Image 1 (cartoon, one colour):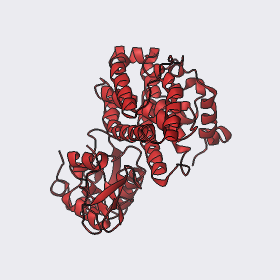
Image 2 (cartoon, rainbow over the protein chains, first blue to last red):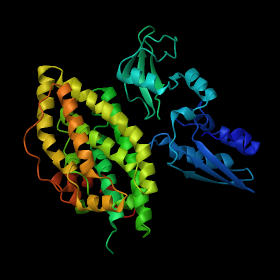
Image 3 (cartoon, rainbow over the protein chains, first blue to last red):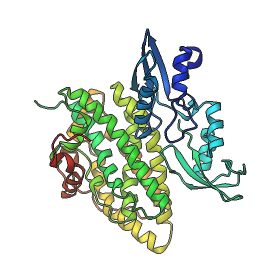
Image 4 (cartoon, chains in turn orange, yellow):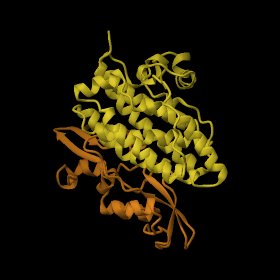
Length: 167
Length: 251
């Protein structure tokens, strides 16, 4: 279940969190990436639970530090905890987040079945972020970061990243 | 004080991923193509993510003030419980793939079983890492098939690597005392229950790759009890160099 943070936590805190972005994908805020699991506010103390996307992802440490920095100068003291359970899934990326990924040149994750077909059976499903053609080919299941695979467009020949479906 | 079995069991899970992760990290910048280089080091990163989770938990269980770094950097080879298979060197790309494949199939099955652990933290780590291990086994199986069912040369190299490394899998399928105890206490997996699925899955992929399943007997190996080949000492010499040279240094 994804908690609607926008309507459950004070707007001031939400806005501070929404300013923190994924260091590898700076167009994606941690809210839209869906890594903020829960926020508890007691008076001026904020406790935040973060869900790692991939266990070894070095971006998680940076996000933790960036959250602490974002709250500097505010009236809140903040504590960030990484949690493993429940595990993050790519379904937690918001619609806004998916649109931002696409505009940035990273194809957003498709559904599990389509994802498997694209990554394992060479199906032409993932749309090129440059020209929109689905005539694309998997180059490598592992891309520039743990969360991405590398594709190339067979029409415009542009190489692009695909954010893998993780469930 | 004698370490608890839970502590040693967590180390044995973590040590496998740490030693394989280190072997893969040696390939950073040396992969045969850019894509495989990136893939192998991505897998290394996943494995080290998993290791951190295990060692952080182990430190908590030990509760003597030691940290995840102490556990990784301040143990000698006799206190490592990883499989002998995983210390084997990066002889060539076929060996890298064979080692990876023979472990990945086991890793995935073992994590699947570990999701049902009575220990909440171990089960949470397993749920998380299983998603990543599923990717790893796809990658290595793909390459086993591509090389096995490839050219004469690639087939000969792949078969050679499988012939050399397959005998080490005996160790995977025979529980150590630590694993037996862990299973009895509910937080560990039943290695015997994994055995059949492992053998079937490995043989299925090897057959698809048109490779011959080795008939040579399993090698006697007791990595899980702390007895290692000399390879592990070289790995640890590299890995623990800074802490051994400047004890307790901080980055």
